[in-house]
Image (tube, rainbow, N blue to C red; front, side, top):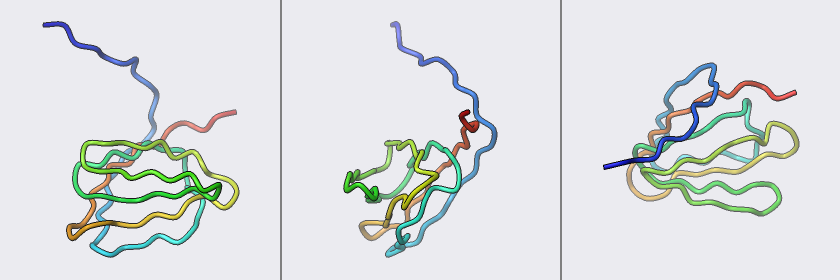
Length: 92
């Protein structure tokens, strides 16, 4: 049975984050351009322009807000969030 595969994109580093139940990240810019993948937990992200996004296990979000006010984030529910972060190359 056929399946789809996206083009591979360049990445420079990767790592994992464990955010405990109740964790809140005050408004801050992303330190790097990165993809965030969520293997466990639920989070809420809200950009300084008011856009918001819920992310749950199995989802991903692209963080590119490395300038300005950035975003606010918090862990939802009663289990910790595990995030995989993949650093993207800087753009010119």
